[in-house]
Length: 335
Image (cartoon, rainbow, N blue to C red; front, side, top):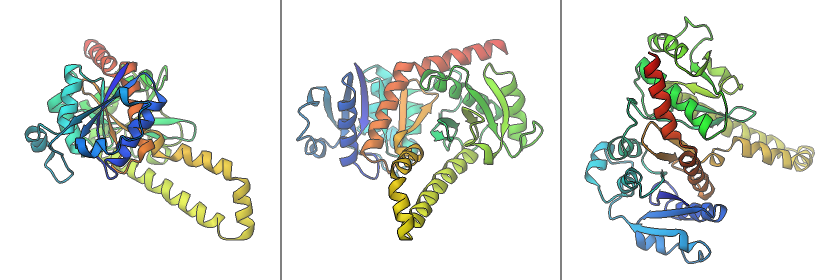
């Protein structure tokens, strides 16, 4: 039985969608237990029709909530009765196997570092969302946790991304690339120029640089970036996907002929939308901390929360954190 601790009050659609997402996840996986942490009165009011999964649900009241307006580090230190702090401590103490939140990204990062703890040898944990590439998904690491990086951080991101893709996605030898402005090794700013030789001697399948236009071209399974550049890629891809889907819908609804064509092609369009939909992934794993932590999108609906819980389960069962620790030890030994 896998136990996931869920921050019910985090996210734009909390607590309704977070509770509904937990129920969806519980009905999908009979070997799952979930702790719903937050305002117990609000949570209990949403649990009227869940007798089929109630035995695998626990409600934990939290008298405090960390919001996006709070200073993350200060909030994690002071708001000890919040779901983020309690959840991280539960994973640290072994009372829970994983933690999921759609709340403050900064607070999840701070909680992961100061309440759960970093894996030995990891300087900076990183957020790593799965992004579509036309065939499957690639892992983008980092996407915003570390705006200013050192070359050694990028090397650690490569090790963490490789471990995640092997343990969770089942990729035997993940292709690891470095995000850059050109494919040539000598291109880029000082950071990527210094990171390139480090990645060459890291025990991962390093395939060189990848340009922004090729990130979704299935050239790599893991794309390593500093948090500033990675966040630009993430937001650009999300915005472009939304724009294209919107334009496509407008054009298909513009004439009677196109409406008929759209009706005939509806199954294909549904599949396309699903492949491009971030809710199917659930969220970004926080890699580099001593446990399975998933940061769900702030605007997550119930299905996205369910997928985020599933991802945390897969991270725990796949042994991602121990795999990162082992790979890092091997890297340090070879150096």
